[in-house]
Image (cartoon, rainbow over all chains, first blue to last red; front, side, top):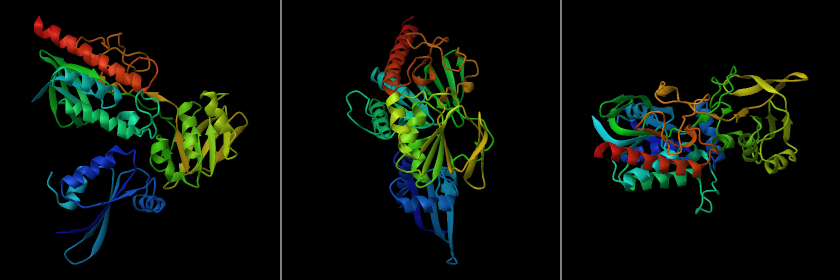
Length: 91
Length: 304
């Protein structure tokens, strides 16, 4: 099974789904780092580069497989089912 | 199946206020909305809501939601697939659930109007923007175009002024319709170019928007922009009602002074209705009215 290395949420203050996503992650015991793309220009650049679009929230999920290989998954929007599948969470 | 006294469709100012009023009357209340807060939640600065000097849309709307929940309202996110009349009242269906209710309050607001031109759908969130407050920061140091000539368009310009490198305002009419002080403020900025009597024909680019084609009385022009902010008003997307209640020519729900629609037991409030002036405080007031009307309706049903 893949291990979660780091979970980053790119959000903005007016984004309701960003808060819904972060609440949901907290409820499921997933630690994450929030990056406010309004305030943080570098975060904004990274987000657009990784997701190839400009809509928040964006989840950048860094994982490690049993062989020790690192991989990254990018999810645009509060896509519960997709995120749950990546993190192996039951919903 | 879940059963409620009142189901409110929409979780903006009108819907949440309706829920506060109905749950305080001890009516079991469910709010189903696509997004808590509605349009108000995309406004960064609110300074015209009485009693609150200055706040943000998301903060104020969260207060509305919390207040409704405090009195027992359930709020779920979802999209309504259908509403149909039955012996016990109405059956409301979402993609995942069905709910039975005695009365319905329609308060689903309005949506951004689209241009309907090539590239608009393809470049959504890749340079095509409908919410300036949400997405303006992505265009720091970049040239942008704003389509429209009303308050929404000029407000977008004020949000973009400190960020964008160049701002074209493209308006199909001869003069801008926005409030004079707003027009004066934007007009004097050297980075703003106002192009009137013009229409956008196409949005072009690769992964992101790179330019737009516009048509002016002097001929076609290409503008090198990376963002196009579309602010040409709102429409009420009432198609899902499928002829359930009477609408006006533009899809707004017809209501009387009690917030009643053409169908007994279905009430409506806020921007989705024919009530003039799309303002938060008006939507909230209309929501309260619809809830009190619905309360009277349920009382009359149960006492007869």
